[in-house]
Length: 218
Ligand code: E4P
Image 1 (tube, rainbow, N blue to C red):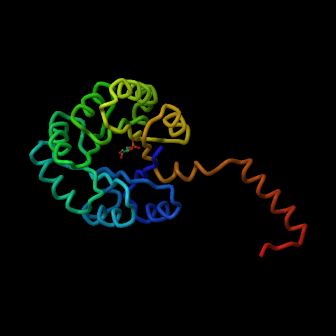
Image 2: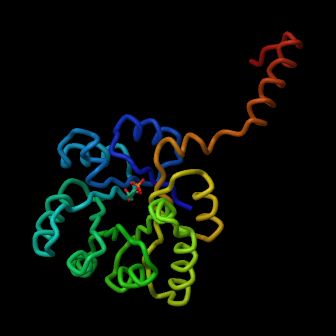
Image 3: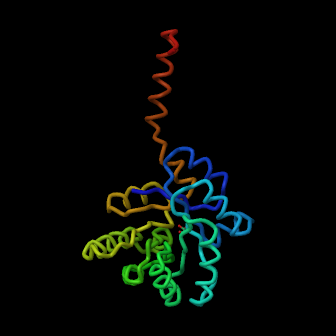
């Protein structure tokens, strides 16, 4: 499973890239707004840190304007993925960009039908938002299971399932058990993945016993 980080915070991205665990980055207009920086500047800086796919989202809602914005964003770096909303215009732009060989990420997916449309439009990635579905009392992970099953029925569909709106480690584990290709994870959830109280307790015990030996290695 590939791990993307869902942030436009370059300091966080640099730290995570150093772990060797980071396969890509996703941003959205809210994350860019939070960074307080110009989208071209922040995406260029992220692409210089991370070799993998870096999603940058268009802000236009009409397909020709989306294509114009996509051209600006694609020119930033070869690993920019154009993120498009799951609307008729977004899918139309996705179809054109995909035919041109541009990587695309169709976002704001909340149903299996929408995921099927995105795959037919040639999306490189589909982003179903599990946390936001959970928030309204629906089961976000059920959507992932449906998309895995549907895409699995049609092996010619090349769209990768990018699980988004992840809120906690259990979302990630469930998505991995279902075989989703990618998870885009907020930095705080990535940090949570490392922790287990028995690891901390076990390490403290080992270090205490080691200190009693009076040895040093090397
Ligand atoms: C995905 O690409 C989105 O940026 C993101 O996962 C949305 O998550 P949120 O529901 O926590 O805002």
